[in-house]
Amino acid sequence: MQEYQDENLVEEVPVVKKRMNSKRVAGLLLLVLVGFGSWAYYQKFGIPTFNKSTPDKKLSEADQKALVSNYLAQVGKHMILPQGDEPVVATVDNPEALVKQQAFFLGSVKGDIVLIFPKTQRAILYSPSRNKIVNAGPVIAGNQNKSDTGSGDTETVKP
Image (cartoon, rainbow, N blue to C red; front, side):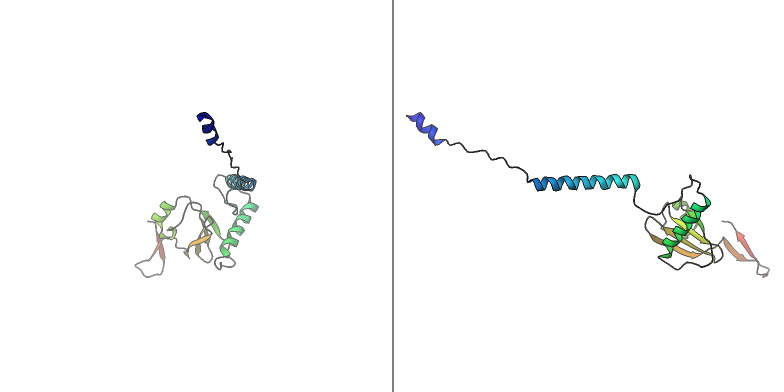
């Protein structure tokens, strides 16, 4: 009789399995898919910006003009540009070496653009990656010193 009483005391507890809510699973799956899609798009196309010229690629004259006008449009959003002066465009490849030569390039990074306006003798250092004008100032070809004769001629001295 003892055994019978012990069996009655032990009750079976039903096992309850918790299931994840189907809305949570769908939301998590959607989040993972959007994240993966964004990462894949960034890896393939990068951040959308205007075309950058590369030294390895030779651009046609029409492409070069389009590139220059695109740079002018971007820089023109930040400052008033010289009118009637077609700029010469250069790309910063080694900012450390340029900073050692001229303080104008302080704060530049690889890939920045220099717009040089020869008629108005102005230079603008623009960073497309940061969408900022890093520096702007007059163009100075080198150290200009008056000669001792007082004739007013200038002499360019290379450092």
